[in-house]
Amino acid sequence: MKLRILISCLLCIIGYAPAFSQQSPVPSSPGPDFASLTKSRLQAATAGTRDDWEKTVASIAVVIDQSGGRKDRDQFWQDEVRSCRDAHCEPESFNIKSQPGIAVVEYSLVVASPDTKTLIRSTDTYTLSDSSWKVISGFRTVVPNARKLRFSVDTRTLQLYVGKYSDKSGQIYEVSLDGDRLSVRLSGQTASTELIPQSTTKFCVIGDESVTEFTKSKHGEVTGIVIRTMTGEQNLTRVQ
Image 1 (tube, rainbow, N blue to C red):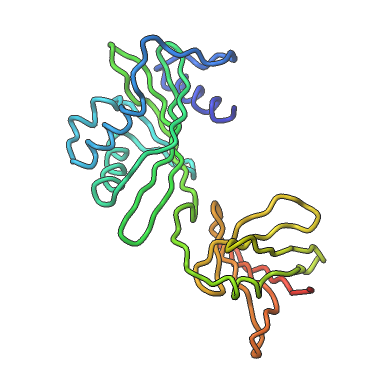
Image 2 (cartoon, rainbow, N blue to C red; image 1 turned 135 degrees about the vertical axis):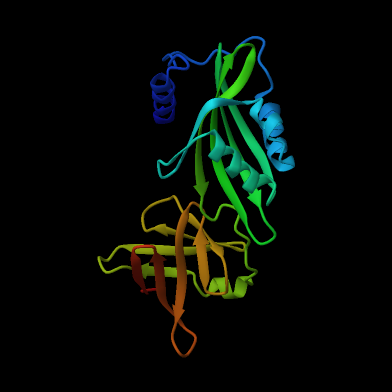
């Protein structure tokens, strides 16, 4: 709902299209294949053919990133060229909602280079003008670690990390192992977060930029966890 409000406000500000109604979206008829439109735009960026790319992007298009930064059509073009021509991009998981004359296309964009993969949550708003559907606004959010490669760690090593850990306030964190997947949860809660191995001791979390590292004594016993973030460190002590 918040995303709808943001898109609606943006469209009203630039005076290009009507705001969304509160009713359920009604598919426009006939409607284009928005997934194919999106793929065609990305293919044009891959080929570096801007004329073809501009066929589905309005001249006043604005793209907003997760920090709130605004990019005009020229910057939008440059971003998609970097993602698709200099690396490799593949859109997936489309979710399309439309009303007559306007459509919101949500999808995931996987950007892959030889060493890394990045997942970008994307939302494009298309409007119909002069019998042509074009992107008028977009939102981009990078999901940290969503496509990060897994380091191979044997289950015997992972089993060493299973246990309970406490922070300074006494809050207990439980680490468990299901098959070859290590996860952590707050004691008393059912929801858990998978820890993605990056080495035999360091792990990351999908959607979070922190690094979780298990610490050991000089004798090789697991003694705790250090969670490193951009703002500092949190230390957990093993209690069981």
